Length: 248
Length: 303
Image 1 (spheres, rainbow over the protein chains, first blue to last red):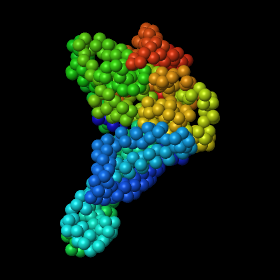
Image 2 (cartoon, rainbow over the protein chains, first blue to last red):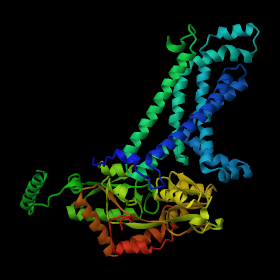
Image 3 (cartoon, chains in turn purple, blue):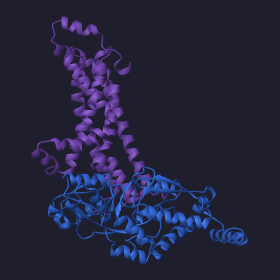
Image 4 (cartoon, one colour):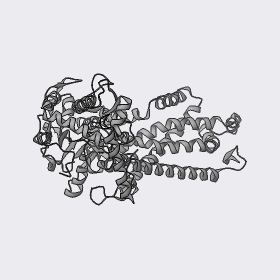
């Protein structure tokens, strides 16, 4: 295959102002991190709440959480994104719709849509992990805590959740990495995150392979560091002698 | 040393070719591949209306560029003595088209690919098949007449196109302070415009007419503004294959000379086209007339 390799392309001018292609990658990485972190906060908070709901004795509440999980886990992420970005704003009251579409900068409205989308999608997955974490604990603990006179809220806050979260750190790490990778869907609604900048560099410079190689390396390094960070967190919060925390 | 080797090898080639001259013409590169396999693979797009797109049959591309591509196939049948030459179609996207031509999956891609210097480092271009100007599509009531009216407004364009580069440069140089939305394809760009997220859509004029024809109410829209650049579309083929390039160029130029190009143009730009039987009403520009009269494989930057 007669491809014209040129690794120097990243330091070449983009033809717009003073920018070089590498600047685009840096800007893209910034958006990727901003999308993923904000989405993760939404996912962790909502997912934990739903996970708790699923384990409650109240059928209506647990049913509601189950319905949420079924809905958000079974619709493709990309479809969800298009719904949040193209359909939902049209359903808002007129002044709100106009504010979202015209007063907000396009990058902000795309950012909000993708954060909501990724947050709600990942929340369904976090929910399932929190639920399994809670259910992995011996039932006797709940019974004992209730017998001691703790209220349901206290049982969760002080007995179940601190243990459940420690147990689920490894699968939660996968979700955390997934949200960084899934954030690339934002490129399809015009948010200039890492993948969008990569495609743009490939189009403008006609050096597709170099651009995608760099993007691969960036995603890999980013996810690898996050994984190491999460391992460190897991060790740090491990309680000696408690279940299999820390894998020891 | 190098020169000596080159001389020697060209001498050998000369000797061989003159020896084989009355047997058969020595074929190389893509021509040889086509002759041996009896097949040519053409690249096409799915939604570059009216250049190369899927109409009612999802396996059969149609369009202006596609018709020109078929002229090349006709010429190949003649030249290679292969009346049964099989044509295979491969769908390409704006990201995949260059690597697929380079790695041999696609032999010839005629769609809506702008010939520019960056791409010339990777692939060769045929003589130009179309020339567009980059302009604006906007609602007739929007009050936008030309580019300066876009100051401080939301403008959409398709990601990775020259229009995107021009818009960003305009922002940097003329402080127009526009919010630029880069949508993933032309259909989505138009959706951004139609749903009120942007006041104008900047793109190649022919494609804007294509989008306008698809709109719910085509009469609400207008193409405005002075063209910010002109671009020549070409067919892409592998670099360093002068024999195949000559066949492609000759076939295209013959179509221009014979006047058949006018019928093809008429069919796609001035008549109703599939799938919705819409008429683009896009008369031939002076730039395209010039390109047809004086075909060139240069990009507009080089002219």
